[in-house]
Amino acid sequence: MTPPATTAAADAIAALERLAGLPFAKGHGTGNDFVLVADPDGGRVLGEAEAAALCNRHLGVGADGLIRAIRSSALPEGRAVLAEEPAAEWFMDYRNADGSLSEMCGNGVRVFVAFLLDQGLVQLAPGEVLPIGTRAGVKRVERRGRGFAVDMGPWEFIFPAQAQTEAADSTVEAVGLDVARPALSVSMGNPHTVVALAEAAELVGLGLHTAPAVEPTPPHGTNVEFVVPAEPLVADGAGTITMRVHERGVGETQSCGTGACAAAVAIRHWAGAGAPDRWHVNVPGGRVEVAFVPGPEGREHVELAGPAVVVAHGTLG
Image 1 (cartoon, rainbow, N blue to C red):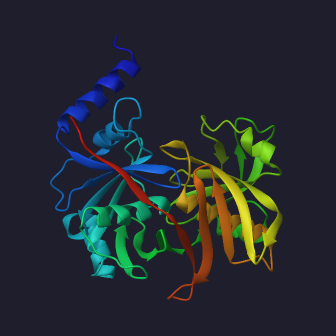
Image 2: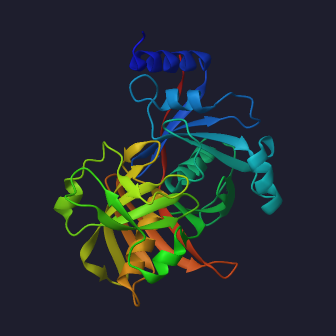
């Protein structure tokens, strides 16, 4: 019988052969890296197998996810977005490293806009805003300084009844932690579960090569953020936290934009009245900025700001 690993490798190689000649780019936002493909009219077959093969770090290009730039009009999810925002011409078709679809990626949407600019598909001057379609709705991206700021939309608790009455709504077990730790689950359009740790040594000692166990698990799985608050937590009107993350369908990544937002939501909630609305979030790949701002519909929104760069271009052999 053929060993499963050998079969998986053969499947990846076959998928890459089907994609021979495909132009691509490689980009990252604070170390969260992506393969990017321009497919404006949806003519490419870029499904689960193809995405997993491209993201394979041994057999493919290697990345935390695949982003396809496609016109919103070219796929059903995008046409639904256009009904909400006719100006959202471009849709971020995002898949995790294992090929599974993901609703949203905060670092990815910044890199996506950097890629659209790199490819000459859009123009965006500093201070201008571009609406982007995603499976979590329309995201508005502002070109700011050397990077981009994204209105990530409103946040919400995944288990609101428990979150409003108790300090935690779930528990998390992870390699390197002696006991299960209390956690809070937050939706940023995709699910996150946030754990606060007491000190940096605990964060360093985590073994995130193995997926943490979350109980109860949100209905569609969850990303898990482990966070250490700074001491002091607040300085000059802003809070500071340091984070590592295990992303569903990927594993540990150098950064997670929606995860940084969820971590700030949870720590601010735990900090109580008087907690700031601006947060510095340190991740292994750098730093992103999170801010809580009024939303147009009366709900609080989260803004995520940080760098995004396209670092390479290539063509599959």
